Length: 215
Image 1 (cartoon, rainbow, N blue to C red):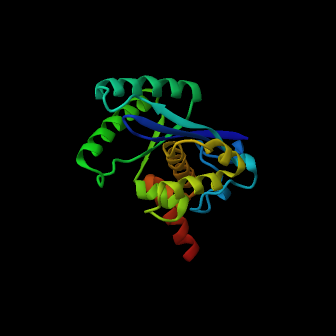
Image 2: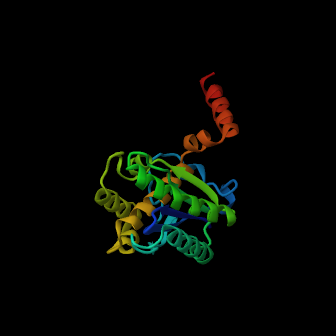
Image 3: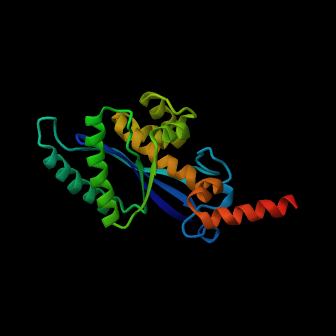
């Protein structure tokens, strides 16, 4: 068995959620770390054929300071803590929520600053980076793009089973939101159609295969 470690991040400038998952697959059946076709045949996130297919590693929050602390100091704290988190967890991929313009301009600006720090540190560590719209993440784990944080947390725990319930018990919603981002990347890995949307060559190959089946 081989594994891809995915680190999900819910960005902020006071509290940053993180959630790390291991996705297991048969090493001989994967191409460049992708899960086997049998695991990618659905757009619905599942734990796989066994409990070891998807395992929560760790989740929690990075606390950067309060509103009265200088933003620059909080961003420096984020860079330091996130760099340490990457070194400790050694993820292969990063899943991150995209900027959400529906919030106030000030909030969007601050979250954008935090996202910039996360992206820079992830690039420094040479992680593969994947970004998703907030509605996409919610839809992935709950089936609804307007789900509340409470519903997201409940569905994340259900997706991950007893280990997931234990992992997020008592955790702030920032942690479960980060796990939801990681689960969205799991969904993408398991779906050949979603993979193709990011890879033009793969999309071309799937198109040719579909055409051959129809002929």
